[in-house]
Structure formats: structure tokens, C-alpha cells
Image (cartoon, rainbow, N blue to C red; front, side, top):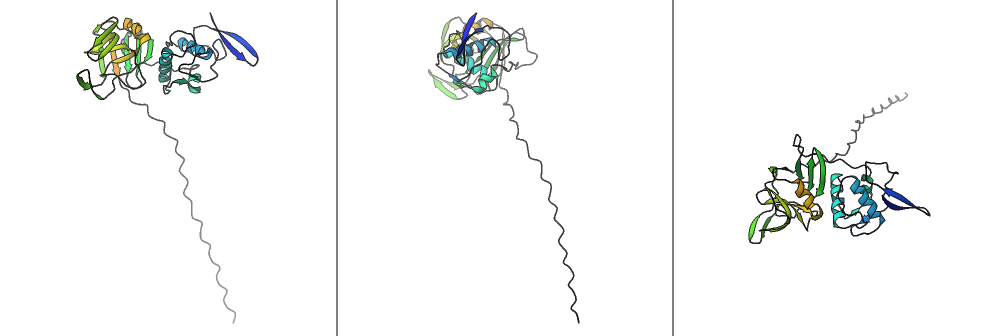
Length: 265
């Protein structure tokens, strides 16, 4: 059992950090009381990592260090919960840790074992028996023309229904660069680990995965596994409520002038 320090007034308490089902705000896992940022190293980061791990995200070692693995998990959590991915955990993200949004399937009626890629939010979800077993932030095709390593083309991740066709263990150097544990699903387009998985679209068309999840996803992406790539429309913004139309003002009747008194003779 892990223990976390919580300071309340002048007293310091040891609170158990135990992975398990969702719990109330005041039980087991303490709430984050301040903003934590990328590269921080403190007890609050460890509490954050415990929350992320409880909800099925992968922050890396629970060691209090806000490194690349925790950053990827935070971005994933923020995207799933409709928040903008940031380099820190703000109040809205802290609140969402106690009431997170469930991961929803992209494709209705799809097989229970599959991989789904959301190009709008740049999220990858591995489903097994209709349950999400891996959820991660990814970087996809940059949607721009490129000329690199003597090759020119348009950097686009294809949309459609595919299957994993072949896999390569370890590092593989293709014509456009190095890939870690790639699983190809459309010609030379693959899911693969990368040392660079930014928030923006940045690849030649492949789906870049954080390094610490590459082998885990590779084990799930067996040859023949369905891969569904979609680009959902942006959710419509809620329109501002319109003010009720004002009632037309009725003109007041004009005052009638009193008849002039006739002059006395």
C-alpha cells in the first residue's frame, strides 16, 4: 500500500493510495489543491499519477515526477474529458479527476477487439471484449505537402476501415524515418512508437504513439486486428439563449383638447 502526505492545518496525515474502483472525493485519494506543471517533482504529482492510474490511464511510474509519460497521460485525460490539452493540470482538470467522462466507441456495431483512431482529438483506443484497455494521445498526419529523404507527398492519415497487415519488433527504419514496434495497417502507414509525439499533427501519415505504450499496443495489434480511423465532426457549440422578444409598445391615445369657450357677447 502506498501512502501520501496530506497537510491539514498544522497536522500531517498519511493517506493510503490504493488503486481500485471510483471513490468519493473525501476517501482514500486526496484532492489536488494546486496546479502542477510539466517537469514538477513533488507529492502532488504522485497524487495526480495515482488518480490517472485509477481511471485506466498510463502515467508511467508513480514516482512524483511529471515527466513525458505523465504528460502524455494528462493530455489523453484532458482530451477524453473535452478539455484542451495543456502542459499543466489546472482546476478544471483537477475537478474532472473525480468525475471523468467515459471513453465512448467511435464505431457502432464494431467487433469487440479492435483499434479506433480519432483524428479530430488525436486519440487512440484499443478495445478488447468491448472494453477500452489502452487509451492514449497520438500524433497523426500533418495534412500538408512534404519533401523528405528524397520523397514527396501529402502527409495524411487515411480515414476508413483497415486491418493490421504486418508487424515488426523493435526499431525499424523506413524511408521516412525510424519507427518503434510498428504495426502497419495501410501500405506503409503504421501505428508505432516515436520519440516525438507532440500535441499537433506532425507525422507523414503514421500514427505516432508515446514510447512507453508502443509495445503494449503492439501486443494488442495482432495481424488481422480491425483498425477504424475516423474524423468526427466538431460538436456544435451551444447557442446563447436569446432574449424574449419585447412586446410592442402601444401608443397612448392623444389627449383631446377641450372645446374653446365661446366669447360672451
